[in-house]
Length: 201
Image 1 (cartoon, rainbow, N blue to C red):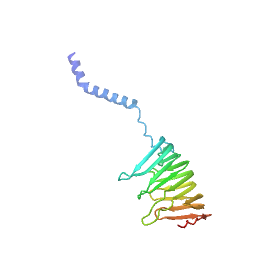
Image 2 (tube, rainbow, N blue to C red):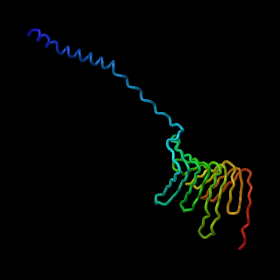
Image 3 (spheres, one colour):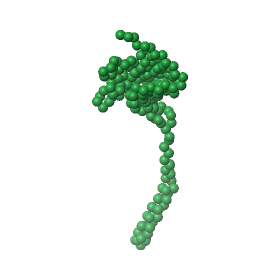
Image 4 (cartoon, rainbow, N blue to C red):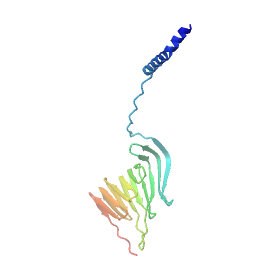
């Protein structure tokens, strides 16, 4: 018995190593293969969140109200970071504090709200403003089925027919480019204007 035990103890390390090799082989064969990582899916033009009956305000660095957006419903699209808004109404203040109001049936805004496309019965109104050493300027109102408003640069443009009302004066055109900072307006296409003389004081 003792001799047999000595013989077994001599071969025991080899037996154990063989068993471990068999166990490793068995594990390697029965371990499921790792699945390949799924490639990143391209963003689709599907909304990732909704807002209903909402109001969003933005403020400048000094805490002054810069803009306010109202709408009945909005849908955010992550693929191009745009916001589609139903029945939008926008109030925007420039650096001088002058107010511009815009509304339409529908709007498409970029991520920070500085650029808004107004679609369907679009109206952009710049309130009457007072300039230093001069009389208060008349209000300015744009009407059209499509108006593209750039609030940071104070521009309005459209490639579709527009009606412009400045005080009592009225203009129509096939397209429009307006720069409120430079006070320059470019009307293109079939342009018609009605200038009402100011009453003498």
